[in-house]
Length: 146
Image (cartoon, rainbow, N blue to C red; front, side, top):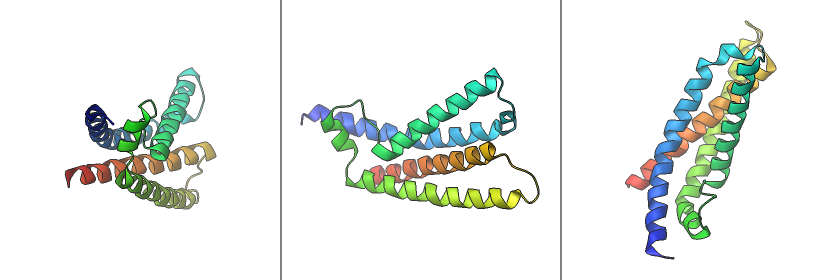
């Protein structure tokens, strides 16, 4: 592996750590701001729903693979070392627990206010993925710092 692969992997790993946290926060914030607009699927809402699906799939792919799929095999191997794989597993576990807690809150909330299944699924998936992304970014930054 060339020295440039090491430098490229280090740069991409640092960027991924920062972006995972920022994107997780932005994802949850934007979805929270748009919760009320999901009732009817007019053209703008349909575009928003499609965008949510695309972002959701992108986050799932990042958490499942560690990203860097368009990079060379050497750079991907350097980016997804043992520490990163452990960080991803811890982040996915955090997302799982967040999903369970959010689902429980949604269930309890239905005793007071009806919740559409699509809304509940969107809230559960958004909080779980957003939380997992934030956790992954935090763990990666901690690993890179020390």
